[in-house]
Amino acid sequence: MKKLSDADIDSLRWTRMGEPHTYQLQSGTDPVATLHWERPVETHAIAEAEGVRWALKRSGFLSPMVAVRDTGAGKDVALLHVHLNSSLLQAVGGATYRWSRTGFWVPAWEFRDPAGVELVDFEPVREGSRLDGGLVEVSPAGKADPNLLLLLVLGWYFIVQAWIEDDAVAASRAILDATSG
Image (cartoon, rainbow, N blue to C red; front, side):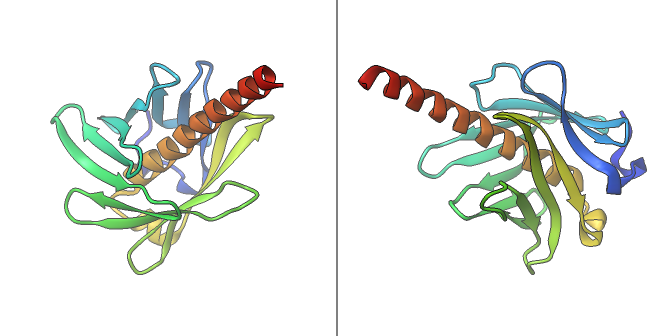
């Protein structure tokens, strides 16, 4: 895999790979990171990039949280405290970021620093109801942020996880509609 520091940041995108629920962050044709769910209905995923391996897991229902853990060191790297419109990411070392949805019709998402400066913007790309990947735009401030890889991986994890959950809700509604009519 290509190091993020050696990649063309202006050409980043997440792409769905052959396996269900496996995505690759690419810079042009070069892989930079992978994100993989062993089981599609679980919230546990593994990310690998630049010699790091992180486990990501969402927990909680009314006050959900996503933990990013360095599997080698066995320590949390970051915690995302999820709220309806704006969530807070706290990285080890004290850096904080705002995570929020930016689009209504298009489910775009972004990370901003505490001063409100946009760092990373994600726009999912779908084919029918299937999530095929996502466009990533990194601002100049985002390119300079030492936690850029974390933002890229955690943001995409959140988007895919939300997509999986939305699909499950839609399937449940379809079953209820078919059996109640």
